[in-house]
Length: 262
Length: 363
Image: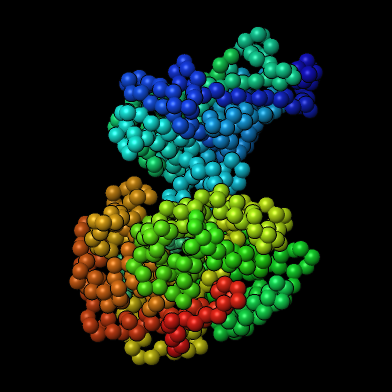
């Protein structure tokens, strides 16, 4: 199939066959796998903690073939680029809607998508939910407010949640809750993440999956929430329950937590 | 159900006859649904009012949708122990505020932290709650449903209960085409009921339409109102939908800073939404926490008791001087904002219920 579509591309025609593309999320804490069963971890400040909930929305997933510097360089400009309709040759949005990655639900860790691109070299996505969904009333699917990733008293989605216990957190029951969201400036917590994939398809560095479909493994490291860009201590900030400066800092931090693993 | 629909439709037309001279757009359609298709309905838009804010394209009004929303509004099964419905706190005879309660009673002997506002003309409102924290009417029910001091339920719990009730399964199918009962459908049905709560048939409205005339004190009161109150309580909604600090000092048991909680901006400290004054004669107590028991208390606040700070609204930096005479005339005018047809409209009451308003005041 790879060979056929390669031929089509050479002939300058649009490939009629879509390539299956699987994205798998692997959540970890440093070099240990994440478990929601009370394991103790420690952040770079030596604060020990356990994790009970770890969830985040991924939306506007876009893949590129590497010749698409234009959009890849837009990172950090501002969230989802709605006006961007000229798909160009080099990139394609393969998932528009928000998908909730929930460590507590293994089926949410896999996305079955497909692309026109024969060779995917970059992947980008937004962590969060675009402002239209934040202002458009009650949504369904992964955005159903029933799932709890939603503030009912101050309308808006919670883009990402890290919740657990830590002796360093001087909050009731030593529980810490970091609910991050916000769609209005200057507290817009949407973050775009762009990752480069390894070598070309089939050169051994990339996992081509079982059925010829490609698999992209994305690792998310919880530790980055504390110090990805600037330090946020559990002792000082055990609770984040609304958009604002703290949510912005934690969003900056977790925007660095993703990496592609071969 | 069919015959009820027809009766409901008749009552509806009768109820709005006064307001619209018998021509209520969309409501004169006979109440027969054609083979499974819900009957479209139109929002009655009073003459001279702007277009509504609510997006009806996503949630087209139908008779069946309205009736489902009404059933949900009066449904105690929406609360954890099946004791409280929306209507427990939003009573029709009190213009859908909680009659004579500064704060409302939630589940398990709890109290809300704010005064339940009247529910009226919601289709024209963009933001909800005293602090404007909710940006869409469809989302509003989720707040009381899940608040521990209101209905104390989970959305999943409520949906589960509705899904097991054959009457609801049938009604959801009538409205939405299949039997799925989910958050979006439940909230859209509730909105269909809520947007229909249009109050525009008070004496004031009839005077404006040239169908009635003010008594002398009412006329004088109207002139004072236009001069001293209209910049915030703007006609025809009697609110400009803005958030203002009116110099009400912080209650240190509630610690409610209003709009600041939503925007995080210090300058929004103690700002609250300008409430509509339609039906104000019966929505006492007043203020976001119900601290004013009568209109007289409100007037005393404006002219004497305000605590003016630099954050107090610029219009009120010197308080709001009012003479006793002006207060008398203003009160007469505010009484003309009572819409008895709205308070008694059987269409808004639960099925089969006969309303006897505590306050019947035909002018």
